[in-house]
View 1 (spheres, rainbow, N blue to C red):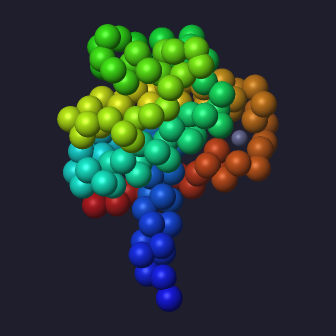
View 2: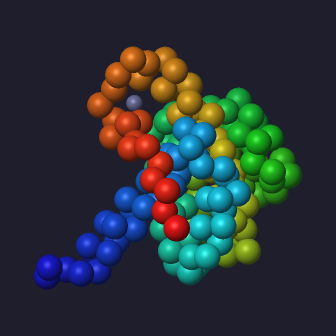
Length: 143
Ligand SMILES: [Zn+2]
């Protein structure tokens, strides 16, 4: 334990991965994830936005995914994060947005990632895949 801060960062990234993928796979409501996100310090929120932008990039989201995701996110299509994600190619600079926009950015990013990731689970990953985040343990009943 020579680098406690990086260990904390790793744990936090795992927590982020779990929350976001549970939402994407319909195991957790978006609003529940938003409550978790809203309780984080702004610097943590930036870390989450960076992390989720990475997932969205890997999931190869399209402008069409962007429009479907925005419609599900509860955020107006004219809000900055909505406009950015619907660009072709999408823009991912969410972590650099003012903190007042973080929650909207989280809603949009997670919703759009969910659209692209669901398509991937139903095609490429169908049957079995080696993605740890597609093989989550059953949601535990935690107090
Ligand atoms: Zn997979």
